[in-house]
Structure formats: structure tokens, C-alpha cells
Length: 566
Image 1: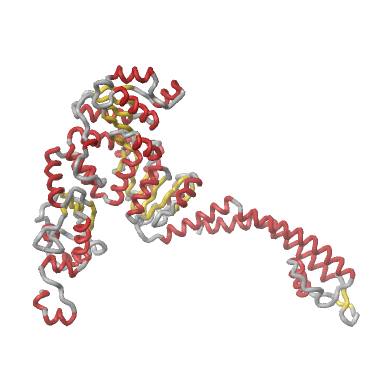
Image 2: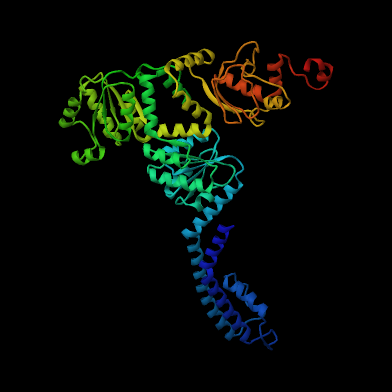
């Protein structure tokens, strides 16, 4: 309503003078026609009334031209009409110019967009998330969430980015608004609506992310806020503010790097959550031996901790991309001085080298230079942006950590499959022996590439199962895991985690676990087993077969064969 009033006020303010000009010119010409005497068809004196004057001026001013009414004009009237035509044309041209300017008015267009956006948000009756800023990371995240059918609202201060987003034609449609992050724009975007499930802020500036997170928490204390942080100090500060979901890309990479070195089976389980197959390819196995890390920034320090925990020998080259480019007048690494630096760091005998600066081209040339010195060295690169992914692929770097991709995939799991993210947090605390056991069990119960999905025991997601439990029956996971084709066999699925309504989590529940209404299940399965499982818990006929081994009867057959259904 507020924005509708703003639109009306802008129109009134812009059109006030043109309307006054039209009114004044019309009034003058009408008054002149009323006052100037004429003659009727019989030659008798005649004075035009106001209705006739208004009628004549209306079609005369709009150049329709019906002729002289109600009688032929005298020369005095015609002189006045000539004068009236010119002043009305001037008035109309001025008014039309004002209308054209009004249509192009940036404030009016902005208010119209805001009004349209506000109407869409008010009409939104399904869960949605708010994403702040549109860049490579959030673009990748939007693609992932859109594939899941999630509704998304985007705020960005740059109109060009909003236009770029709209050209993507995401399905379902992404609602976007241009503006600076403020309480008003957040409220306009639906932050207080019950359907708003999360707010995501992934800007490069930690202070900006923290400020937005605090603002959002003050507006809606129950909202799930997902924040990017790149330092331990900032992460701790966010935790003190009560923010639970904090994404530190450097720590995520360091955790993944550390698992790959010390607990490859746990690494496999983590990567399975992100659709990796349950086996380690030859080029994915990290060597043990001396490592060289180029770049002692946030990622370099995080990797240092991972190497220290793995008891791996390492050497640092404190290379800062900005100072390197300033000194060399280039972001290419590889002159005689650079060669000497790598050789001095031990590149000839090192097992692996990590390029972890903020410049993708410098990282790439460091790795290519190291390969010239030592063709057998294992190369690991930090890729800051998805824009350079083709270059890194062509260079055949052994392992690439793409920060934007790491961020988007973790946030995607947080939003679309929160149980999967909680599963990850728990496997980090396990031993590799535990990981090996779980990995082997997954392979035997599913296959090498299971799909991960989440189901909540409610009518909208598990109709038959929910109705069955509400009627007082009990159900365990072992019975639900039966095959739809042959209930005597187990389906190719495995339950990874269960979270009940009290927020209590059971990791790797056994077949005797009794399912309750509102339980959330995290499951790994083949595609066929997943489809069958979803059919069983929603379709009462299939559910009846799984639980009893009998076909459910309908209509007259249900009456005649009542005993079969009981």
C-alpha cells in the first residue's frame, strides 16, 4: 500500500503543472467562446452556452474537427478559435512531453518495480529463501536450489546484475529486487513471513556479512541465517551472536584436504554427500611426503593446520599475489627468480605443491612451473572463481579446490538437505576405520554411487506411513527397507541418520529403530530403490503390500474378501 501511494504521489507531482496548463488553456478558450456573440441560422444574435463551448473545444483541441457548432461562426468567433487552436496545441505538446518524461522517470520505474515485487512476495504461499547479492557463487547456488524446485528471492544493489539474473530464466522464477541491504528492503523481501526459511549472505567482506546477519536476527530471531566467514575470529564472533550456520570456505577446504590425507574413507563419505562415487580415483589419492605451499594467506594457514595434524612435512613460500604482480608487473609466475624460489623450497624432491594465492592465473603458472622442475610432483590448485574452471581443466592440474563451488555446494546442502549437513558434522568426529566400515556397508547395501535424499514423516511427504502411524500402529526401519518387487528381499537402500521431533539424532540407525510421526530420515539408495521407497510410504496399496504381503482390495472385492484386508 505504501508503494502504491508513492507511485500516485510521483504521478501527481510530475503532472501537476501540465494538468494546470491544460486546465487553464481549456478554461480561457471556453470562456472566450461563451462571451463572444454569434448568430443563428436566422441571423439572430446567439450566445454559445457552456456545454456547447466545452463540446467544441474538446474536439477542436484534440484536432478531431467536427466543424462549427451549433451554428456557423462569425469572424470574431473564428479569430478566437484560431487563437485557441494554437494555445491548446502548445498546452498539449507540453503535457505529452511531461507524460513521456514521466514514463521514463527513474523514481517512478523503481517504485513500479518495487510495487510489483512486493505484490509477488505477498502472494508467495510456499517456502522460499532470501539470497543477498548475485555473483558467481550465488548464481551456482541458485542453479542448485532451482533444480530442487526451491523458491528464491534475491537482493542486489546493482541493477545490471538483477537484469543479468532475469535473463537466466530460472525455473521456478527467481524474484529479484535492486537495492542496498536495509531493514526496509529485507522486510519488503519477506524476511518476516512464515514461509521465509533462510537468509543467505556470502559477501567477500566479513564485516558486511556480520552486520547483515545481526540485522536479520533482530528482525526475525527464528530465521535460519547462513553466513560466510573467512577467519576463526569472525566465526567465533558470529557464534557468540547466536548464528549457527557459518560457512568458512578455507576451513572447509582444509577439512577436506585433511581427510583426504589421513582418513580417505571419511573423505569418501563426505564426497558422497556431494554426489561423488564411493571409490577413490587414482589421481585423487594424495601422496605422502614433503609439500610446498605457495601463499601464506587464509587458505595457506588453514592447509598448514591440516598438514600438521597429518604429520606431513611442508615448506611455505610466502607469496602474496598483489605484491607479486606489483613487483613483476605481471600475474605470470615463471621467470628465473621464480624458478630459483621453487628450487630453494625443494620443488625437485617434493611430493606435492599447493598454489593457494588469491590470483587464479598466478596459481596456475606456479603449478605449471613446478611441473617443469619436477614432472612427477602432485599439483593442487586453489581456484577462486568458476570463471577459470576451463583453464584449470585444460592444464591437467591433479586436484583443484574451487572456492565458489565449495561454498555453493555446502550452502545447498544446508538449505535443501539439512540432515546431510548434520551427517557431515558427525562423520568428522569419527575414525577412518569407522568410515571404512560404513563405506563398505553402503557399497553392499546400495551401489558405488547412491543417491542421497531426505524424507520427513508427515502427510505431505509420507502419506501412507503417516496415516498408519497415527492409527496406532508401529513401524521399524527394517520393514520399510523391504523391496517393492519382492518384500522378502531388502531394497538397495541404507538409513544414514534419523532426527526426531525432539531434535535428537541417531547416526546409522539399525533396522529395529521405530519410526515416529515427524521423524526426518536421511537415506542413501539407488535411483530405483529411492523411487520405490517414496512410492511405498505415500501409496497405501504398496504400503499395505510391504507390511502384510497381501494385495489391498477395493470396492466389492474389499467386502467379499474382508478377511484378507484385516
